Length: 250
Ligand code: PEP
Image (tube, rainbow, N blue to C red; front, side):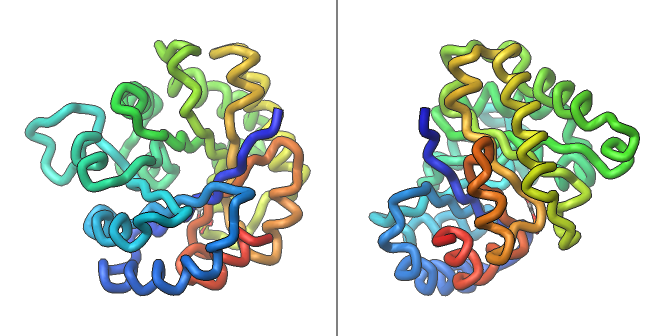
């Protein structure tokens, strides 16, 4: 089965609305003929409506970098699924390692958010990955499987089709150290095998597993041509239109 790759740009806490608009204006012509892969931009919440308006009618989707699990309520500083959708976004990242590291986002919270995203028809990009100590201690497979089991608890296979997984070894994020294509492909195989166990073999076959961690134009092709790698989640190299376009057009 062929899986349509997704190239997702995580802008983190960069770009004002004006900067985001300028990016989109420069970026769209560079990827206008791209139909092989899906493309999604994840700006900060304050730039969401600007980016949605600037990408309207194009081949570029828009998502939030984080979303709350509750429908609404007294959760200062948070954004709900309804707000995300009303702003015109279609995707959300869930459980990015920076959320896990700096905002105590646990597998339980990831699970709550995943349930909400699926219930509300939002495409969830669930991020998992091991830290360096875990890799060096030979625990990568255990960590990935534990994160997957936590994230997918109570998710019915029939509801799971929209899920996207991003494998992001934490030691490769923002460090310039990319996992070799072989290391990434091995991890993706482990993830696909575990998804077959937790959800179903059919979901394991169709689920898109992105690689994230210092993807740049120079290494995109080697990573993205691996059989089990179905796209990329790109941080630093997604901040410049030329650089993201070069990854999209690898
Ligand atoms: C990310 O933020 O998800 C990421 C992979 O960042 P970078 O590409 O900068 O390593």
